[in-house]
Length: 387
Image 1 (spheres, one colour):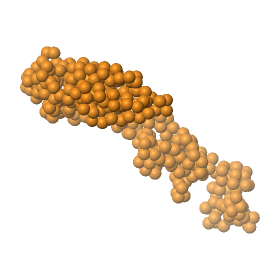
Image 2 (tube, helix red, strand yellow):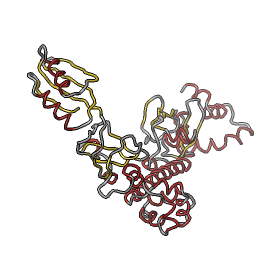
Image 3 (cartoon, rainbow, N blue to C red):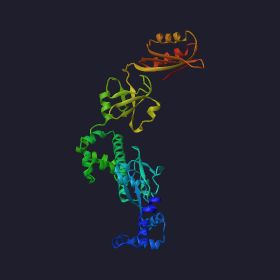
Image 4 (cartoon, rainbow, N blue to C red):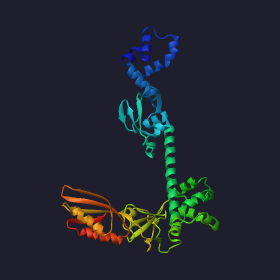
């Protein structure tokens, strides 16, 4: 304040005036200051500068970077505008700002003299809400471009998923459709340039997914390019042909059949199958919680062949009391049932009960049920269940 009063422009002019006025050169240079001074009738240099800023630059604010660089913005501009002035990437990842050392929200309206430091985060991205308080054309243009691209990306993904579901619903291979070149032909048919634009149009609701399917199988030539679905190929590989009742599992070495590890289905268990993209059919026990979370449109009927005989891993969880000889009696039940224990984990809780986990393999659900009944009959056993 002292420096402004002693050496500022207004003080310099008043000093010259007291000393006999301005010379011709200074009069030309500072004539506009005399007019402002007379109009404002302000003698304090600080007040004078504030008045000049209000009168001359009432539609602009002057902001400083942390390095002291001056930036000019329209009144009402926010840290978002400042961030995009520095760099597009900084604007896209702007998460907040520090003004004169204090954290402020993105909606903060900058004031002349503020020193702004932008805070960024890799997880922060522009949103439509930013358009409500961004003022500069550059910032608004960058925000709109990002939002449009993001909407286009989401619509393309949604459209692709919808078309893929339309193909699977009719047991046709979507992957073959993509590789056959039909997707490019479909794009041209709808006067679009790429497959992504085609899927984006489906995502935006301009084209129905079923229309894409109908185009792919519009005639025999096109239909020949879309090969049998994963379901059809799986039936042929597992059963040697089609099966009205679903897949008969009789060759567990076939790579198109997988057994879910979450429920480890055994021959004799009630089972259900789910088409898994790129991995054939995954077989679950009926009622498996994880299977219930899968897409119902991918479900197919499966059943065990009479010839199937394969050992599958099983884990039994046995809750017992803690007493000597109990573990020996339980292992005897395994021996009587002809089942070999591969791994056993036993621990006793603070309440005196023991939790026993037995890992083994068995090739028949009936055999497993018989073993579980034998273990349940051991004195001191509270419960037996598949884990």
